[in-house]
Image (cartoon, rainbow, N blue to C red):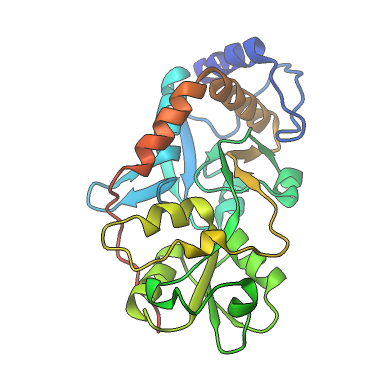
Amino acid sequence: MNDVSASIKKLFLLSLIATPMVSNASTESNNIQFNTITDNTLTVCTTGDYPPLTSFNSEKNTFEGFAPIVAANFAKHLNLNLAFTRTTWKDLSDDLKSGKCDIAMGGITYTKDRSKDFYLSKSVAKNQKAAVFTKDNDELFNSFKDIDKKENTILENKGGTNEKFANEIISKATINVLESNLAVFDCFKKYQLSPYVMFTDSIEIQYRSKLPDSVLSNKGLGIALINNPETYKVYMANKTESGEEIILAMNNFIDSNKANMKKWYQESLTTKYKEEAQYCPF
C-alpha cells in the first residue's frame, strides 16, 4: 500500500462513521486501492463560480471560499498535497467519473440522483432554493404567482440544480439558460429594469445581495416557492472503493472539526472575492 493509501486507510479505520442516509458507504475496508490519488496529491474538482462556497481568482490563479479552505485543511490533515481541477456545473459529474479528480466540492446540493451515482458526504451547509432579482424590481415580485408570468424571463446557469428546479416549477415564464452563474449576474447588472428572475441557492443570494455594489435584492428569500424542501450542501466522490474511503475520511474530518467548519464558513462569508469577468450574452 502506498503512503497515500496508508494515511487515509488509517483515518478510515479510526472513524467507522458512515452516515447511510447521506453517504451510503460501507464500513468494510479490505485492501482498498486508489485509482485517482497520485503523487501524494488529493485533486479536487470545483467550479469556482459560486462564492462564498467556491471562487476562482484569475489574477492569483487560485481558488478561494469555503470549499477550498476545507479542502486545504483536509489534505493537510491527511498529509497530502492539494491540487484543484476547474470544472463547470454541466461537466462536474463527468469530470469526476472520468478520474480528473478524487472529490468534488463547492456548492453541490444533495439530490437522490446524485446519491445513486456517487458517495456523498455529510451536510456541510443547509440550503434552499430562492428567487433573486434586482432591487429595481422589488415592487414587481411579491409572490411566486408574480414570477411565473409569460412576460417574465427566468435566467439560469446550465447543467446544475438551478436549471432543473426552474424547469420543474415554471409553466408560463420563459426560461433562458446561460453558460454560468456569473453570466446570469452580469445580465442582472446590465438589465436592472428588465423582469428577470433567477432561482438559485439561498446561500448565494445572501452573499451576493450584501456586496457593496450589488444590484440584487434579497426580498426573494421570503417568497414561498412550490416543491422547495430544505436541502443541504455536500461533497461528492465516485462509487468506487477509493471514493468510499475518501468520503468516510471526509465525514470523520467534518465530525472532528465542527467548530472549525463554522469558523471557516463565517470567514468565507466575509471575504471579498475577485471574480473573473463573464458577460451577459445578449
